Length: 113
Image (cartoon, rainbow, N blue to C red; front, top):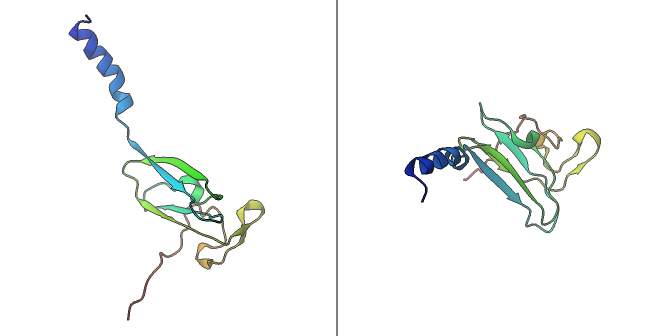
């Protein structure tokens, strides 16, 4: 039977592996068409994936962010990007760029009367 000191040594070896300071954001496209998610980190937080990428039907994207990460993720559709990530969007808020690189637009607003 291993001595308690050996158990403590093994615990100390495995502890850093179990203490994770990252979380995974998992985005899945369940739509019947392609989407181009936009991602923007809040002030002082990194913007994952340079701010945007393509997801085909049924595809998923998984990326790690710090557990304290704050930001927003939104869907875009009807995009037609060409070389250098530039193209046409039906939603003009995003400056016609696939990867916003931190240059996010104003969040959607709803006006109630």
